[in-house]
Image (cartoon, rainbow, N blue to C red):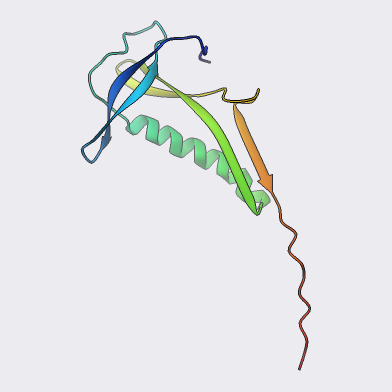
Length: 111
């Protein structure tokens, strides 16, 4: 897991469709972060997969409303961007809120 005291550096990433963005990347000391423009697709795939894995059990319990918060640290390893789930607020890596609403039963009147 990444230490919050590690230094970050802004790098240029390619989001696709000619969209370029700056992303703060955690320096792990293993590799120099500055590596030119890197594709963001590996991070997008990680976000998609993490979201799918989290959504499946939530969909099984069928809450009326669900909120999931998680943080990602982005680092460069072997010239590619890598995502890691990190501690955000509180003590958990994931903060999940599920809500169920009891809907009143309406009585139907037969005419």
